[in-house]
Length: 90
Image 1 (cartoon, rainbow, N blue to C red):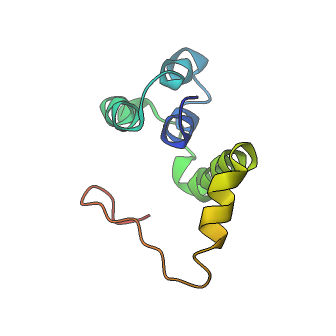
Image 2 (cartoon, rainbow, N blue to C red):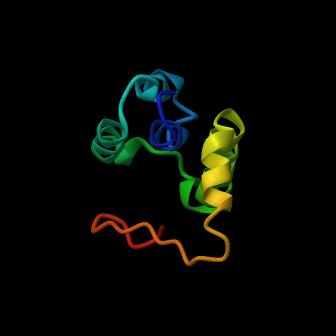
């Protein structure tokens, strides 16, 4: 995957490899939009596994990019928030 968003969105369709493979070369915005269009086909257990998947995706991201892990750790105990109008969960 080119980015963590692509990996996360692809995980919604792991039971359909012909769909999940489409996310490997998309940027984050493209991946999000594609997953929205295909949401009716996402795996049935998605809401039960999404937090575990997010942990795995982020672990892979920071394992592959230790400089980003350092930047994140440098925030200390700061309260970090993803600000988006599209998603109230994350």
